[in-house]
Length: 288
Image 1 (cartoon, rainbow, N blue to C red):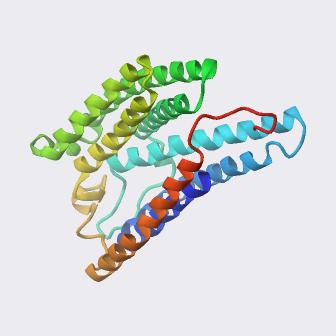
Image 2: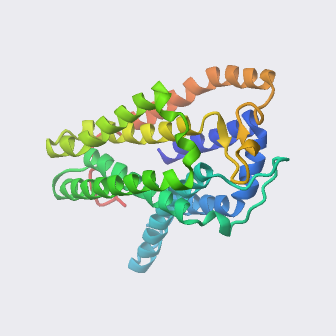
Image 3: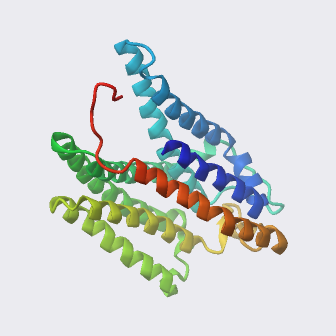
């Protein structure tokens, strides 16, 4: 499953480079250190699964358990910090050059969004684990999902209020956009139904609601920013948009054709992998 997910990461990076090369160059140069930390975390996360049982030692296994934990925690936080900075706006000049620093990315708003992202993934991961476990472990995961849900709600409200002051442009004419209301209602219904489904032991429903919550949150952020891709904190007129940062129409059409051919194969592969590993986890002597 993890190897299959890597395909999506590579596809995302390649698509960004081909479709909006200016965004790719600007964001990757500004977020360079953060991206290196992200890649290191993902590498150690994958490696820890392979190396954990190579040596019959409690300290060895504990080392790789910590490696796996940090390799899972850091990406969840860093993705949120990156999104928080983009929502807030980053220092892009009139000639589309990055004028900031790494420390400038560690602002209060971005850290808040990073923590929000972490709690959202904790909630989602715990809900997913209720599908894969039984007995006491499932009860523990249900409890953690409920706590993650409460934390996510509180931080989401706090982040929304903070956004009014830190990135007020996101609310310009947003109420007149029908897509905003569709996503907002979907988010409201999905987030309310998660604890209801968990209490009723409808774990698959809880997972679908959690997935819908994540998609709605991402969708609301995208709708609020549109047509901007990377807003400028110096002057919104300097922002990178779908109009001034995208590739030529011929390049975009070529990408569309490749996507129509390649994406079904990737989706089919991903679906097959998840079907192979479907069902509950069974603990044996050979388990990690």
